[in-house]
Image (tube, rainbow, N blue to C red; front, top):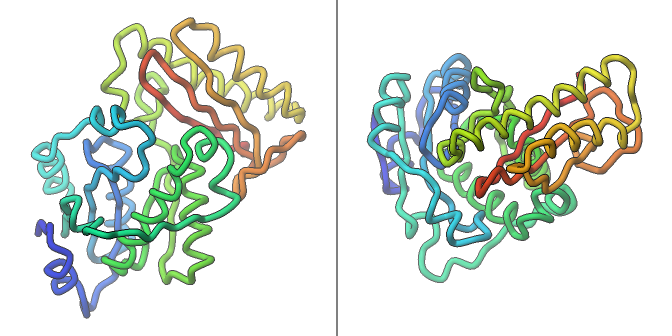
Length: 277
């Protein structure tokens, strides 16, 4: 595996290559969710690249950025084991040089839910992803369904700006207890982890009711709300039932609608979702 920090050196290596390239953008502290993206890329491309960059512009609170877990040596071991071809680990000044001022605002899809809870978050996401796509010029880029709204933001940006890349959204990977894998899970205490299980249970209980024929969004959302809130350690920030492509709220659930939640479990913020299929 070749490791790069410098953009020009990376571009020199991959430019003009007679191969298809898949890109997996990450903020590091890799887990099986990231590995599933890498394996999908390796199955669909000749070369696979991974970026590790903790993007400060998508954090609303300095303490969240400071507390984001990091273990680059472990990440490198994982990537080498998985047969990744290129790793890009830029310093902050490589991505945001002095006097950097450009910001991408994707519009309406970035406004509700995570956009409302974390103002400016998706501008930071869209800007750094656009930069990475311009740096790598990959054929395909891979994201996880757990960050569903982020996926829609990226897909909208790619379409609107005519970026020549295919966006592949891969299924959410869950731990044996059903909790969606996240780098932030390491911050959960034992009791908080037990409370976090209720997030998954609430979502899939609502899915089961939808499969039985329940279509009313208010009822399905209340199922999720009651299950998650049954633990005093869980503080529900939002529960949404919306169209998956633009996250406009729906009164009546339909196939491909998405139920999304954000929950503070103790001091750790977790998001999750389930698509009605």
